Length: 287
Image (cartoon, rainbow, N blue to C red; front, top):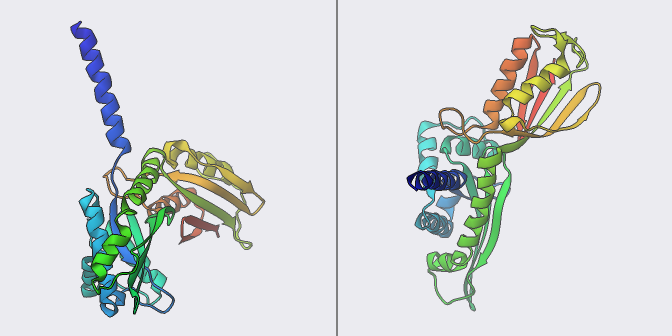
């Protein structure tokens, strides 16, 4: 009888541990949506209503037990450290997200209006995986019109019934990433002036370059999952290479880290490459 109880306890523990492992909560940073020409670094200073709404959205996530990163605090720290290396808005956003330490960023587009018929707030929320830019969840909330200037209260009303389903969808998609890894694209091409082809025999075993790449991917892809989309004489595209959520030290594993692993792999073969990361795609050019 004791043996049966012991085995049952082990099975129950295994099920519970598996559930907890799949339900790892991400850290989130809420950032304002910016239109063309708007500066992410100053947009909240220019519009206090947006600052109020961003704070209310963050509070909504905090109240539901999610770990959040304060956008204003991170932005202030970045400004003080003078980390910006480009005036390009997309680059500034990328730099801020990378230094945030968050897993997911939620972009909040806030539309606030005041008229004789009353004030109105519409909030559009979209969650993205920071590492790959993949959309995880989206929703739209509206406050209705009221005779008030309390935009914080209107924002809270707009998102009150939308946060729960929004976070549930986001958590479900994030659980899939924890379980199956992040999906990225790998685009490998041969420079027309390169001395190498995919048939070139390289590396310690003098295997064709394409076979070396296959063997490497089978080792580094998360759970060995990768899929080839197509291959030509000068190009190979893998449209679903899985990378892990965390590295061995528990830190976020990014596409840039995978890019570094790729650089080390090709250097070990004696094959020079160029690299470029855009969105969720790593472009490698064999020189």
